[in-house]
Image 1 (cartoon, rainbow, N blue to C red):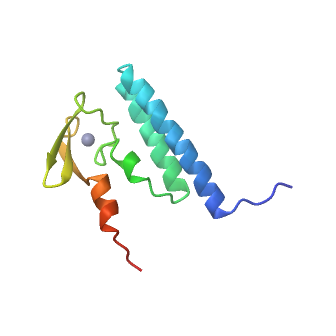
Image 2: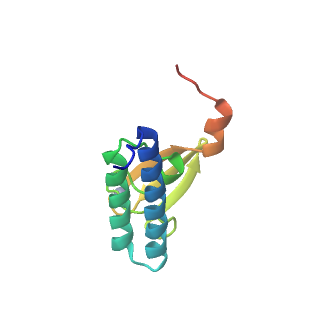
Length: 113
Ligand SMILES: [Zn+2]
C-alpha cells in the first residue's frame, strides 16, 4: 500500500501541476490559441481549488479574475501602472484587476499573526 501523502506534499504536487498548466497556457497563447489558453487557466484553478491551494501572486496576475481568461498584455489586456499598482484591463469582460507591484509587497514585510 502506498504511503499516505501529507497535505503539504499534495499541495506541492498541485502547485507543480498548476505551474505546468500555466506554462502550457502561455505556449497556446503565443500561438494565438486563446481559447485553449483559457482552458488551461480553468484547469489550473480547479486543480488549486481541489486542494485549497492559494495561487502564487505571480500566477494570479496571468489571468483575469473576473472571466478567468489568460491575459496577454498587448493582446487581450492593457497594462497600466498607477500609484505603485499594476492595473490590468481585461478586454474580454471589460473589467479591471489591480495588483500590487511584487517587490513593493516584499519590502513592506507585512506579517499578521
Ligand atoms: Zn476578464
